[in-house]
Image (tube, rainbow, N blue to C red; front, side, top):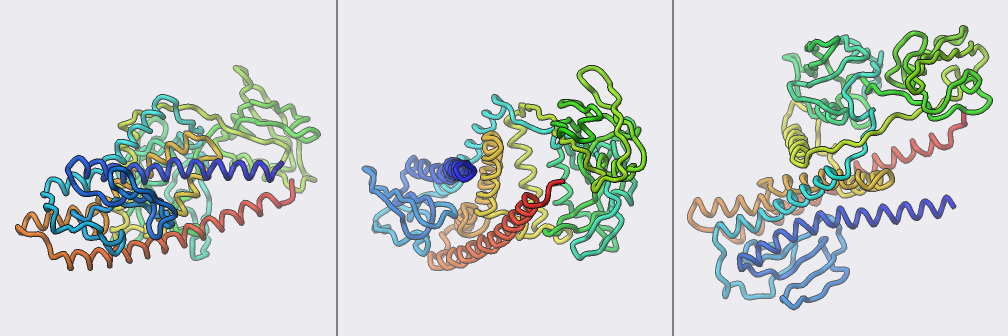
Length: 470
């Protein structure tokens, strides 16, 4: 049965990847295709993927439609607009007999792919606006639920956590970092990751605007690089409500009287906003009984947990927890705006020498497929949300003024317009070929780190599953 469930789950993920990721590529190329046909530009081929074809057919419109082996994108062969024979193959039509498209046509056709990605993202955002997006309390907050005392840096040093050093407290709500507003924990982590603040001495620095006791104050924090990916971290975790999922029979939790759906308010007189605090309190109070306060319906109930001197793991008393999930209905334009902002700051941090974001931290096709797979296991609405992000990123990335990309074609067309003549075809073809090699090299480089992260997380998951039960 487990094998059947795994197989079914994998097939479902593959289907969603094909529909949404493949669909995003298709929508982009469809934009080029329709714009080219509308403007009277010759279209020779419409391909999803690069390289040798898996299969193809010739349409009544004379266009060859194909599916190719390398799933790294796609292309619409437009030999009138760009000499891409090294990538798309030689044109079968005598281009000398065709008129040269004007500047407006070139800009419209090359920009149409990104425009269609934005339209597709907006349509998907409208779906989430209607159906709602499931969001856990853990992710929908910027309230600090736990402050780590010490962090292990990427080079193995054990240091006082930046959050503890700066005086951040449990219960503080982070409203902004370096002036950039944060409304969810994911935004908070993204803003911190892409921050680039440094002191005159070169020490990493971030200005946290926090709300404490109803007042806004600013706290200077000095992040450190931690984790396998060397991300900027300060040592905080989100605050959320612990809801009892169940109490294992014949355990301290069951005998103490915990019931499913109890909401843990405090333990030993300390407010509980994160599972870490819960575990630490149990671990340091083994020799005496402690009182837990839970919210049961509309009533506050005291539950006494006895001493646990003989326990092998004092933090384990037989309780399992969950947290509340709510539906949010984000405005479509806000969804698009938030992703555009996140994409802009990610690209900006890539070229900022003061940041710690490098190309290795980007995701290629492997990383994207992995996130689609994880989202598919949880809820199809997460797949839709991630597809919105992918389409916005496709649009922005393709509009960058880099040869081979749409933005590069637009740049060449603009230079030709300014100097009054098209750039030499041989020069353009050479530059396109060089940058195509560089682009594929970057994809391979990024994919190496994607595979390494996937493998590392898979090993950690297997180790957790095979660990002896407490």
